[in-house]
Length: 205
Image 1: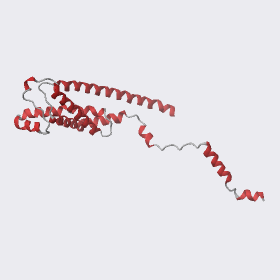
Image 2: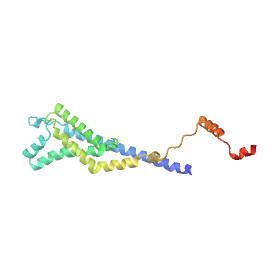
Image 3: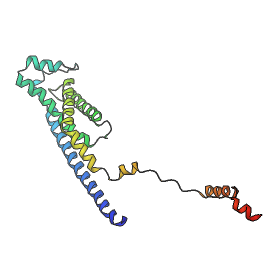
Image 4: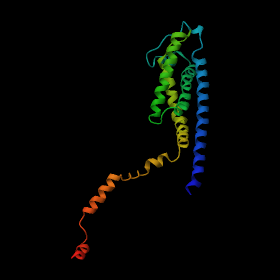
């Protein structure tokens, strides 16, 4: 009976491993494609705005500028574009980070990645400058993507991809250790030293 049940279990395990490999490959390709798009959007020189753009290290400063100096559509385009730029992080990163504290890890990775991009912008790209508000909006976009869809699909992926039986093995009681020869001999010695039944004593008399 065990021999008949093992092949289907092994087959199911291999199917899960195959699905996990395919999903991770697709997600990795998506992450690479998004990285290329991110580089084109954020690292493209803009000589026309070189005299207009300045670095911003004060949170909220650029957002107030969008509200005061931009039209409504232009402000939505600027802020919404930065927000949407972080959404793919919330969709893709949960597949690669541990399940424990996944949301916090995803948020921190997004913030670090976008801070590095902004630093490269300000240091190397003409017409670009570091803006802390862009990092905040990108990180908020990652959280939005995580809560809307990333959390669900990553949870389903991990639930399906886990090897079956691992949780059952944790819940099963641990088998009792086999008695060592020393313990068995000690038990026999103790038994031999135990008082004999009353019947044996009567027979001797």
